[in-house]
Amino acid sequence: MPIHIISIKSLDTEGRGVGHLPNEDGTPGKVVFVEGALPGETVQCETWKRKSKWELARTVSLLQESPLRVEPDCPHFGICGGCSMQHLDPAAQVAIKQRVLEDNLRHIGKVKAERMLRPIYGPYWGYRFRARLSVNDVPKKGGILVGFREKQSRYVADMTQCSVMPRHISEMLVPLRELIGSLSIRQQVPQIEVAIGNDRDGLVTALLLRIMAPLTKEDENRLKRFADDHDIQWWLQSKGPDTITLFYPAGNKLKYRLPEFNVEMPFKPGDFTQVNHHINPVLVSRAIRLLEIEKNDRIADLFCGLGNFSLPIARHAAEVVGIEGSEILTERAKESALLNGLEEKTRFETRNLFEMTVKDWIGLGPFDKVLIDPPRDGAAAVCQSIAELGKHQEALRPRRIVYVSCNPSTLARDAGILVTEGGYRLHLAGVVNMFPHTSHVESMAVFERMD
Ligand SMILES: C[S@@+](CC[C@H](N)C(=O)[O-])C[C@H]1O[C@@H](n2cnc3c(N)ncnc32)[C@H](O)[C@@H]1O
Ligand code: SF4
Image (cartoon, rainbow, N blue to C red; front, side):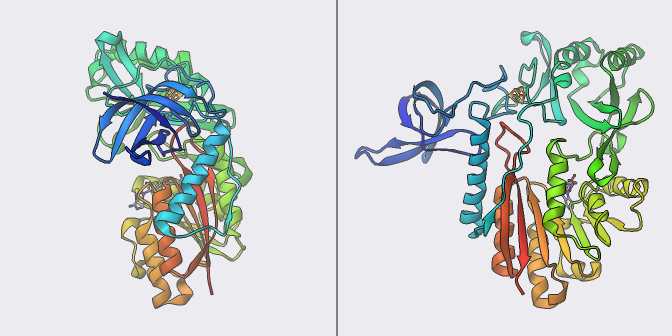
């Protein structure tokens, strides 16, 4: 494959440097995405994939280095698909994510925030409290591998440590490989999920083992010994999510606490919880501040999950209606409301929000404010129906919408709907450094109704 010398102009959302092959007349030609290269650098790179409009290349040598380049912390960086930006100064990563957000809002939504919010920062390392690790038996790499997938590949990375997971999980990776390798069903364990809670006494670590065949007595004893040695809980899942059960030791203590709101939420591994436990309380506080809650407010929390925002909001508002697609999660949210003495101020229901209509809003009654925290697909039907509400029943339109997003392109699309069709203005937008060193862009936006 050809070798080029390329000047890198920007970084794409996968953390790759973006440059151009020169045309014959010297003008910028075909786009090249260069792994391992940073903006401002000149690199020698080798193409490994060629398409008519673009090429993918990897850096062979650095001819001019960026001052923002740093030494990656993790020895697996570059191979493991979990991180894409460890070679870039963490503050510069946030600046790039903010630019990605602004560019998406401008190009996709054709909108611009009146003001950018200050980014929310947390620790750069050891922040990842939830992870799905793949398991594979690869004899030529010494047996069982437990880890994230390799970059652009289906292979499991040969991970012996991980800098973005808490230290005790990183240190457990090799013992986990040995444990799975010792099980009689080692070929029938495709996945281990890590879920960490925070009890009053400290962290509680749960490992959810996906098993495709029954464990033998000896397997069970090995798992129990591992749990005792590493102070973890084992959960097992044999089929769908409803088969997730605590195996050892007895007594589920998995919960997470938001002390600022005097709220605690029991959960099970496999439930959606925010990955970054350092950032989550700050995110919830900021969402509550941005909602500008008044004590008589009736608030909708859409895509509410376990009630991560709903319960803290209920400490301040008159009523919160949490809506969520997973019945397992709405049931868990109802139990948490009861546990926290918030059952009279909250209501939870299961509904497919990708099919939300004006009629649904009318049925739910007027809300003063709405919080939206959708999955990557965004909340097009929710925003479209809010926009249409104005044409039907003006009084039903919420005054303020706070949107928490894990995908800037769908946020931008939905912002376009609310601003151009719904009569809202995009007051504020900003990034949340929820996933340092990865290409994920978490952000928040605030929309105000124009009366
Ligand atoms: C980003 S999570 C947010 C959860 C919650 N707000 C939190 O902070 O933990 C998105 C949530 O949307 C839910 N969801 C996904 N598709 C949905 C749909 N079509 N209708 C309603 N909820 C859906 C998921 O189950 C998940 O709980
Ligand atoms: S996810 Fe963990 S193992 Fe993979 S590159 Fe990032 S820090 Fe390293």
